Structure formats: structure tokens, C-alpha cells
Length: 207
Image (tube, rainbow, N blue to C red; front, side, top):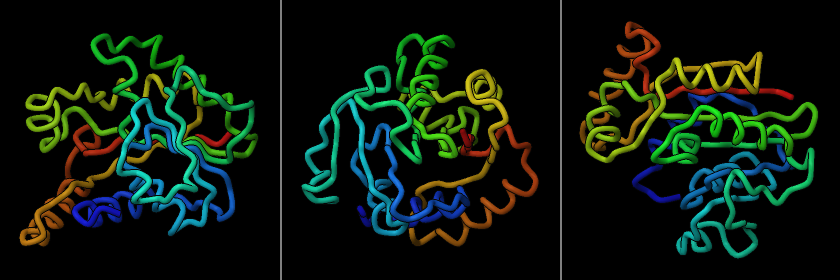
């Protein structure tokens, strides 16, 4: 795992609070540089497959050549029905229709995921919240990420994956020297802030 992201990734997966059963098969959709996939393999003992529209040259250095990476997107999934025990998306949905952000396109993407999950399997979706006080000025306004509002996130999830479990929490990459301060910030946000301002929206659906 890239050292700079260790604290952030550990915080996120701790707060996700989901038990992955070892030796099961997981698809990491939009796997990026492979840091989430590494956690799935080394910490959870999963059989990990990656999917991304881009080829990340650093991923073999992180995961090795045995990691199976497919260069395709959510609308062209090269998998049979009911192939995976888990499907995981981390900050992916808001990228699948960039420039348009159409409801029907997001719904179609979620429907494609539903097809490849086995009965009893789970889809875990983690999406940054648009109006989080840290994300909005930096990620949305400065970098141009079209993060979903919590209301919209819940709408598209409930359309395709009804009876999902929702979770909301804070998780960020912080400077090590001021980590103690930001941990206080997280505690106060999670205890007192309205949920619609927390950093991450999470949906967990069991088929």
C-alpha cells in the first residue's frame, strides 16, 4: 500500500465495518492504483479481481502479476451472471457519466452490478458526499469532482438496490503532525453534524 494513504485507508475500512469472508471472490470496480485491492487480498484473504477503464502502470508493483485486472468499464462487464461474492466500488459512481450525470445512466450502472453478484453476495458502494465541509471546496469546486448529494445517492440506490443498509462517516487523508486535531474534528462531526454533511455515503446491499 502507498504509505501516504495508509492512515486514510485503514480509517475508511474500519468505519465501513463490513466483514468479508476469506477465500471469497471480489470485484473491485474502478480499482485505480490497487490500494483497496491490496487490503482485500492481504487483510481479508479474498480472491481479488480488478476492473478499471484505465491501465495503471504501478498496479503490478503493488499487487504483483497474479492480480487479474480487466481494462473495461461498468457498462461492459465481461463476467457471467452471479460470478462474484462481493462487488466493491469506492468513489466510482460519480465518474461513470461525467459531463452529464444522468439518473438513468447511474441506474443502469447499478443494474449491471446486480447481475454479476451471487445470491447471498453483497454490493458495497462508497461515495464521497458533495457537501462535506472538506470535500466541497477542495474536491468539488477546485478539482471538479461531481460528487453526489446524500439525497441523490440514496435515491439511485433505492431505485435498484432496495433495502440496502446505509452508513455515513468521516474519513480523510490528514497530515501526520496534526492527526490528533483531525481525529477530534471527526469525532465532533460524526456526533453532532447532520448526516447529510458527513464525508462518505455508504450503501451495502445483500442479494
